[in-house]
Amino acid sequence: MNVELLQSISLAVAQERRMGVVLNSVVSGLADSAGFALARIWLLNRPTAGDPSLELAASAGRSQVDGLTWTRLTGEFAKIQLGVRKIGHIAASGESLHLRDEVADSHWTRHPEWVRREGIQGFVGHPLIFRGEILGVLAVFSRSPIDDSAFKWLRVFAGQAAVAIANARAFEEIDRLREKLESENEYLKTEARENSSGLLGTSPALRKVMQEIDLVAPTDSSVLISGESGTGKELVARAIHERSKRRDRTLVRINCASVPRELFESEFFGHVRGSFTGAIRDRVGRFQLADGGTLFLDEVGEIPLDLQSKLLRVLQEGEYERVGEEQTRRTDVRILAATNRDLTKEVAAGRFREDLFFRLSVFPLQVPALRERRDDIPLLAEHFLHLAAKRLGYGKLRLSPENLDELIRYSWPGNVRELQNVIERAVILSGGRTLRFSLQEPIRSKTLEEGREPANSRPLTRQQIQESQRESIEAALKRSHGKIYGPGGAAEILGLRPTTLNSKIAALGISRHSKD
Image 1 (cartoon, rainbow, N blue to C red):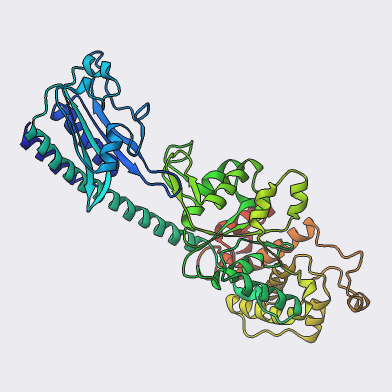
Image 2 (cartoon, rainbow, N blue to C red):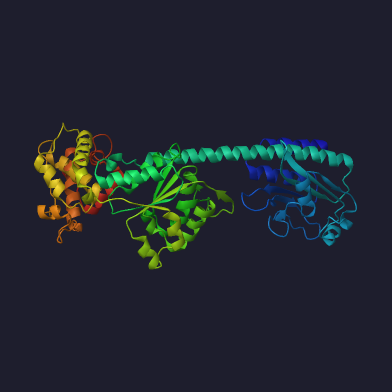
């Protein structure tokens, strides 16, 4: 045994930080440089559920019969139960095993015909131990006898290899945490945090919601938040998160309605580089990003049926795999889901899994429509007016009694979101002077007194919505002299991302330069 050669291999391995490189450097160094017929490493896998086992992680060597290399990690010995055969015995006992020239006849040998055919005359297996913990097993097969001196040096080498493996794991964990932190920072930069004004108010309907939030927030129970579009379901989710024991961790939101069908699995669980066309780098999924925190599934009713079973598995077992990766990962997230659909009808129609519905709706919470909390409209309107006037650089604007009466009488099919947009549009069009609203079909006093909506109350048509957007964008472009990006730009005035505003300008056929 060339001791200096083993030391040089150890030195080269110690300088590596990537697990795959460390493992392959160990076995290839022993097989290619030290001349062993076959060198292998099994690593101990300790799953949270089930029995621990050894998984083949690296293999190197070459057959003297047909010249084929032995680098495959699949097959009969790819997974070995702890305590089974010689490799399992070494890992279970923590004791080394040394077979001399009786290798073929040993009761430890599973395939004596292979041993004779390849001329194997020696075997050594050492446990890989770091700080008292068994990480796996290093095993070598030799075509010449392995004496006691070589056996001892291989044990020293195994100890050094265990240190290198432990260090590589530590570096991988550091890289994982760095990747997660970078992803969280990127997410927080791009994900606009909604203002909590949607939960302002003192109406009985809102007080009931707040009481339910206070009840469920300290638990880890899943919450299904239902309500019409624009009622503030995401604000309710944020309120639950901020009152929970996970408030110091990330609240990650995913709008299930905006994810392309073919990218759902990648969006949820992440993917590895090269797993599909366009996967040019590893990507962290939302479940990994939200680990330890809260995951908010907005528009959960839009999740494709074929993915719902995979989502259910994560919720039940806390385990998932990235697309293109066999490694099972664990996650600890609290699930908050929101929908404007009647999921019971979706279940009955076969479009939503019943077991997933029950898993998500441990605590159902209904968010009231704005017309059900009219007492809150003045407070909300004043707040939105203050925000819009400040952002647009106007002085203090006031809502007249006539303005408030008009706002209270309107049916608000778009709820709080529509109220905010109406206020902001009025501020833009006012030029800092009198506020005027263009609301459709106000509610009659008799209807208000009777507590029901008129039969002919309708939301805005698509054409009316587009015309309203056109007016707001043209007014903002006029005020910004055609500038979209940066301070004082139309995007800032409207509270939109510049890319979003550009898309709307193109869709509506607005000429940006004609507004300079």
